[in-house]
Structures are given as structure tokens and as C-alpha cells.
Image 1 (cartoon, rainbow, N blue to C red):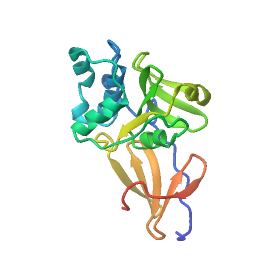
Image 2 (image 1 turned 135 degrees about the horizontal axis):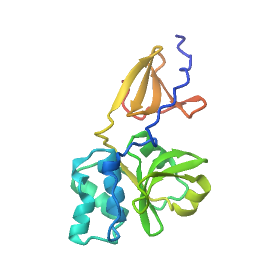
Image 3 (image 1 turned 30 degrees about the vertical axis):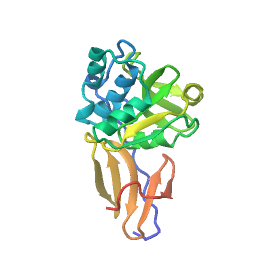
Length: 211
């Protein structure tokens, strides 16, 4: 393969009902206004498999917790030693949502009076959410509708125990997958990292250490 040759287009690779797979048995239903802890458990335990977040909703109900927010999630993650990527009130800054989906964990996000999860995204087109007040099925929202409600607060765990990154050799390139999600390709000859947007490859900074 020529050192400057771009990798071939990646095949479509998605979870059965979204880019981020949270099994139904791990999807939490809101009770007593504990949407924050439901959404946090969905992302940190349901998607990422982090034991310290398992049963968080139940503990919240039993303890009468309510009225929490992003700050409480970050404080708890720090307490149990889980590294987190987060932002607060940065409306229009969508990169964290794309990064969370690529990480296989999705994102905990806040909308007015509620906390839910982002489990899939196609920037400028649609966002897939998991709402703990709803049917517990993934719901696709138009970009405009999502923008009307999301005010820019979000977080996701850096660690993902359920979907560890895996490398696959394809035509001399090393492709990185996070669970079923294709992340990008590494060219060992040119030391260039390529990302795929669904149509074309483009050069980018490697998101993980070089293989």
C-alpha cells in the first residue's frame, strides 16, 4: 500500500438499536424525581460497566435523594475514582456528545428540569436519546428539536469496561473499534490517524496512544 494512500471506506457498524448499546436490563426508570441518578447509572454502569455506579438509582430512592445535577454526578465519580470528561452550560459545543458516543458509553446530559442519555448522534441531522421517563426505548430526535432543549451540560466516563478498544488489521492499516463502533484507522507507515465521517476519511489527532 502506498504510504499516502487513504484507507478504504469503513463498513457500517452500529449496535442493534443505536451507536451505544445499553441492554434493557440495565436501563433505569425514573422514580421520585431521580432522573439524574437514572441517567448516570445508564451511562456509567449500563454502557460502561463501572461497578461503583451499579444500583445508584436504588440507593437514591432508598435515601430520598432528589434535586441533584451534573455537579453531584461529577462529585460521586471523583469520590469513587472514575475519570470523567464533562462540560457545563456550553450550548452549541457538541464535540463531547460525539466523543461519548465514540467511546461506547454515550453521554449523560441535562435539559431543563430533566437528565437523560445521548446514545447516538449524527451532527446536524439527529440525536438518539434514552429517556428514563419514557418507554426506555431509544428515541431519535431531530437536530433542531434537540437544540431547543439541550443547554450544553454533559459528561461521560473515560473508562469503558464493557467495550474495550480493539484493533483490527485491514489492508496494512490498523482499524480501531470501540465495541461495534468504528473509531478510525492508523497508518503505521506514515504515522497518520484517519477518522471516518460516514462519507470520507480525514486526518486527525489520534484519540488514544499509538498502537
